[in-house]
Image (cartoon, rainbow, N blue to C red; front, side, top):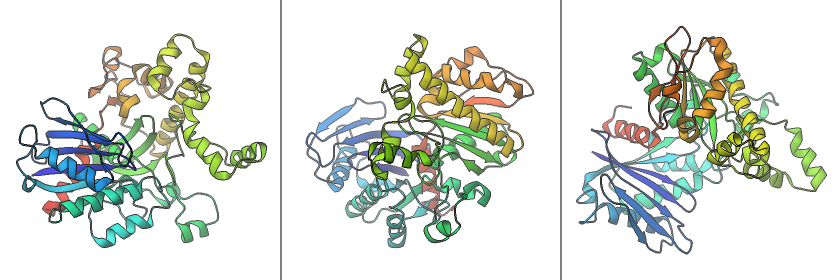
Length: 401
């Protein structure tokens, strides 16, 4: 069975077609600038050449239609006709407390996703548009929702509650939800497989380090804690997001500069993180690494604060789980930055970790980067959220969940 995985943004649509049995990628692509002048589809079949189609896409329904026509194109398509697509898996950013696992999409599920839109106003409405576009064009194909927040629903109260009046949780469900859950679940499971041990017997820290970044404590296969909160703004220093700050800073800056709360929050989301710390030099860690090695003070400042934030969370989660068996690095920075991994691990030598320098200099490969010894194993595990979505979708359609 082929599973079509859809990740729908406000003006974009990423997709992959994955064979559920072999778990091989059949085709992938991206619709850009939906509803904007200059829209186009970039499509690559497995083992084939990239195809770029310049085409007007007024809305997501037109984008999905173009994707389906491309996938069934007789010259470079991946399937003969739409009957070869057995299900569609949709990435949904926020499921609130309603969903602790993937679920078959119904009208009730769509309403629940819409009800979470105030928690993810930039993402959930776009996710819903993608669902409805696919339903209109593939009415007989099962649709499955896979939630970024679902994996973190196993957190206990002491991990997810904020120390504010309890009525805000009771009335508005203000709490820690966490994000990147599909990645954290995939990487922790894959790490257990690499180590040859059941995930139910391991304490694992997953460091999802990209432009957006989060860390999770996974104990016995379940999420015990994670760094992002009610929104993806909390936690680690990120590309343009501040991560953890004193909440009073919001009012302080608003009063100093005559800004609204929304304007300050936009600054914390879009102008902060390593971008803000580097005084606007860059939010791209590749640029920062090059400048850091060249002695640029702005880059050095940004990198040191970023690394410090990761070290703090690893230490905290080690204590929270009363030990750790494996530390995993994943996502764009985690998979491809030997420098950042090395700087983090230099502060964890008290755990009896020593670094295999040759292994650590590999980029984007699944590899153990710690030397044999009594300490935790350190691994680089390239994340594959699309494959995880396809697996969960297939399980729902087969009736395994």
